[in-house]
Amino acid sequence: MSTTLTIQPRPIDPSVDHEIQAIVSGAGSGSTCNTDLAAGPWDFDTRPGYGPGASMGDVIPTGSPRQGMLPQAYRDASDEELDARIRRAKETLGDRVVVLGHFYQREEVVRHADYVGDSFQLANAALEHPDAEAIVFCGVHFMAETADLLSQPEQAVILPNLAAGCSMADMADIDQVEECWEQLEELYGDMDAPDADGLVPVVPVTYMNSSAAIKGFVGRHGGIVCTSSNARTVLEWAFARGRRVLFFPDQHLGRNTAKAMGVPLAQMPMWNPTKPLGGSDEQTLADARVILWHGFCSVHRRFTVDQIDKARAEHPGVRVIVHPECPMAVVDAADEAGSTDYIRKAIAAATEPTTFAIGTEINLVQRLAAQYPQHEIFCLDPVVCPCSTMYRIHPGYLAWVLEGLVAGDTLNRITVPASDADPARVALERMLAAKPSGSAA
Ligand code: 13P
Ligand code: SF4
Image 1 (cartoon, rainbow, N blue to C red):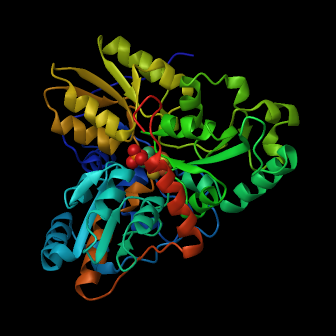
Image 2 (cartoon, rainbow, N blue to C red; image 1 turned 180 degrees about the horizontal axis):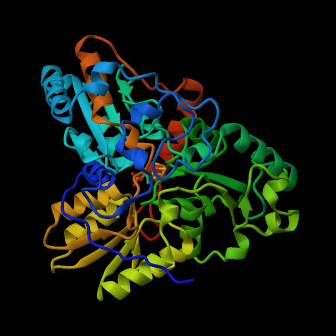
């Protein structure tokens, strides 16, 4: 089948929102995955679903937090007015508040952040401010939960829009994970009993992109958390303790990492929580080394080998870097794969003018393109399609929660119950203590 895909470097305006508004109004060329992206995210707050953007096709679990309607004054305010109100509120609050902005946030929010980084760097930034009364996390729900786990008990972690979940994190729900564990226990026997080699049957590993309840589950069952930058180290840790790994929620990060470590694909069955034995059979599960949960990121699933081929054809010498949440064929076809921070550092370290084709969320790519004009940097996906859940943090919500703090109201506080928080911290501490093989202990 022929394709008309053409990959054009984007103009150097870091605001994805401006580009979407221009496309929808007919003033800009290019295409966007959904014209509703040009509307305010509050139009979708009271409707079920993730809203427009890359994860809108996924099913949102019932019971996911919903954001009430943002007060009218914030919905009506112009971009300039919101910008000024955010600045004023931040000035008034001073050191009482720290604003954290994830790499995938829209530019209009990131410019107000005291720290910009990946989910783990931001959780650490929260740790470095034990005296701030409030941490406003412009990211998604699991990131705010992690900041709550790592921050002081009296500090309030605030998520400006409660509907900013993560569709991938939502794909592993605690009841499904408990059910999976029970089925595996029936198959493998006592999950705490080591075999002759001192290995337990299964070590659960969860990606940072998961709920605190799942991190708590993992902590209770001898498991560990990983990020996209330390997944290999964490899998080494797990294989030193268990015969197999149960990896959730992202099948792609699990598969890409285990494959790079030499685990054969045949020993990585998928666990589909809607099917008995996850859709696998007893023999396959007995032989398994890594059981992959049937989860994925809708943003990173959009990248294809075809896009990489086009980029190489249209930009000879292009350096292709993708996030390990991309499908295996895309990671295999790229020159490099790495976390958001890896991508940022790789571009920052390039001394010669270089063309980079990047497979990750558009807001980060566009910001890097603006920051490094000596390079040509573009997103592999020619369609402007931001992460729909990150997109829900519009400056209107940021202004609303900051002005709330000024008025003495702590809006949208995220609190992890102690029953999950204590074991979840154990799983995070194991991750922090895990060292790459070959490094000094
Ligand atoms: P980081 O852990 O690199 O911040 O990535 C989070 C994420 O959501 C990737 O899709
Ligand atoms: Fe979740 Fe993917 Fe969005 Fe990251 S980019 S927050 S994994 S949906």
